[in-house]
Image 1: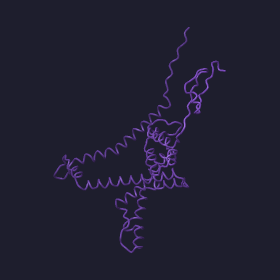
Image 2 (image 1 turned 45 degrees about the horizontal axis):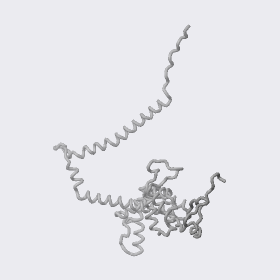
Image 3 (image 1 turned 60 degrees about the vertical axis):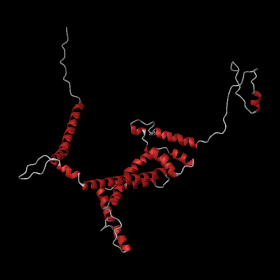
Image 4 (image 1 turned 30 degrees about the horizontal axis):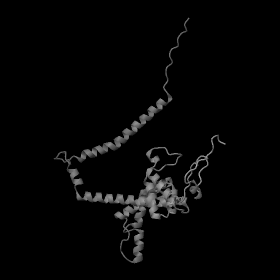
Length: 295
């Protein structure tokens, strides 16, 4: 007799298939919504930029006159120069100030380092609009508190601080973004080996030379963690440039030996080596040779 075969059981969908499908569906809807809100206005702006103005009697036509008027004007070049000056000055001030604060916090014995670290991040926490309005109340040519106090003190109408000028804008923006440079340079200083700077200081190097030859080079060299490699035991390694600087520092700090010891085998028993008496007289002794058998 043959047993009756059971009908195949229906395969049930995996529990994760339905959730994954809904996840991809939500992602697609979000991408479509962002594309509609961003790409459609951008495309409409580009389309209207190559058309002439339409009036009741003249229809719109294709033209590049709008681009020639915008980018061939002398005012555009002046605005571009001001923008580059503002951006470069703000970046330079923020990087210099953040690097200086990071170096003081990580490479000196400054007291209250935890408080110093927290205070250095305060400009990053303050909103940009509040930071700007506060400096307007301080350095405005007409209502600035600093200008009013100095004008009353010296009995003059001279404007001492103009926060609306290029240097004033660079000062405000550089102060606001200096904590970002502080955080980046703090991580770089913590990843460096302080023994290199100590070796250079003990070798007689001055502080500016240490900053230029060791600190800046180590801070500017990429690490294996930045390249995507896994560091050994969680500590990032420096590249070949850092290794070369480390070898130089260790070589200069290592004392030189004035004497050297030489070891060689003595001649077998019964043989006479020319010059052996003179070598013995000068204090040289060879390593005794063990006889065969190990005794």
